Length: 102
Figure (tube, rainbow, N blue to C red):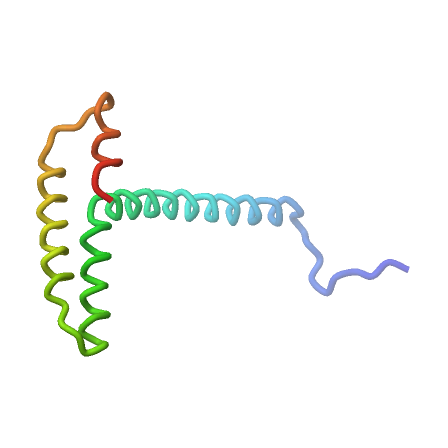
C-alpha cells in the first residue's frame, strides 16, 4: 500500500527549483568566503611579523615581564612592511614581496 503525503505536490518542479536556488546560494557563500580567505592571507603575508611580535609583547606583559624588546621588534617589522608596501610590484617581481619578510 502506498502512503500519500498529507500535502500532495501539485507542481513537482517546484521542489527541484528550490534545491537549485539553495545550491546557488551556497555557491555564492563559498565564493565570498574564498575571497575573504585570499584577502586575509595577503594581509597576513604583509603584516605577519608585526602581529607575531605584538602578540609576543602582550604575552610578556601578561606574565609580568617587560615587553620592550617585542614592542621594538613589532615597530621594526611594521616599518619594514610599510617599505615593502610602497614598492612597485608587477607579475615579474611579485614573488619578492611575498617571500621577503615573514
